[in-house]
Image 1: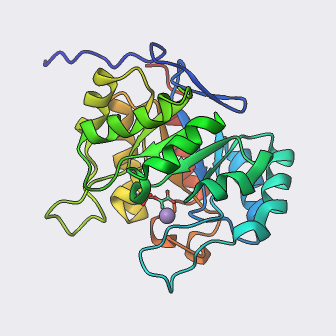
Image 2: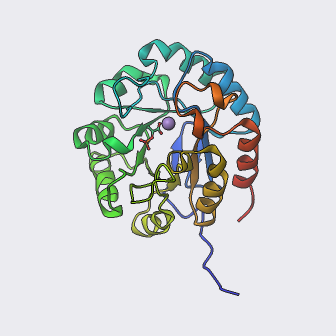
Amino acid sequence: MLEVERPRLGCRRAVRVGGAVVGGVRPLLIAGPCSVEPGYVEHALALAAVGADALRAGIFKPRTHPDSFQGMGLEALPLLLEAGRRTGLPLISEVLSADDAEALGDCVDGYQVGARNMQNYRLLEALGDIGRPVVLKRGFSATIDEWVAASEYIRRRGNDDVVLCERGIRTFETRTRNTLDISAVVVARELTDLPVIVDPSHAAGRREWVPALAMAALAAGADGLLVEAHPSPAQAWSDGQQAISLDVLAGLVTATRQPR
Ligand code: PEP
Ligand code: MN
């Protein structure tokens, strides 16, 4: 039998997002709808009941086409506050600009920088100055070195609470939404002391494929998963085709709690 060195968890810089730890002894499961919708508080309660560790809480959405739903924006702040208060879970929300981060104020525990903004250096520096944890997605055409270099823009401003997130890259393949680069987990964990998590949802593009990619990520040593999940995936306002149901999420909860 081929002997593969088992990925070691718990030897990373541990990044605390609210009461959750990324880079600790077990992988963290961040789950939630693609975008916050009017039913978000109920969604959040359902995800918490299943066992999510932290919640996706995007109210500003970077959509490829301007006609697509752009997120609820600041109108959704009361939903974030209520979801955080009632679930007790940390909220991670995508920001497209420093102004977005300021507008979110203390309503969120961590920021997400999306693939399209990985090299928005002024944004990265601003988040470095703010000092809250940042989930930095890999740009879909960025090399691993460019991704790690982008993380340095946050760190050089004194904020080491950065989590790298592989979400698939653009290749010649068109069956999947993106090509999940599993090797990036292994390589980025070797190059940096930062925790590395995987978003299998934006890689797969279809909910049927998400569990297999998630398991592959965990097997490669990912420090967590960022997954789109929705109590009624078909009704989701964005990316419903790749949102997993609560039943499937329950399987990932079990997987992230297995001793490794
Ligand atoms: C997201 O996670 O909501 C998102 C927009 O993903 P990405 O930046 O990876 O496309
Ligand atoms: Mn999405």
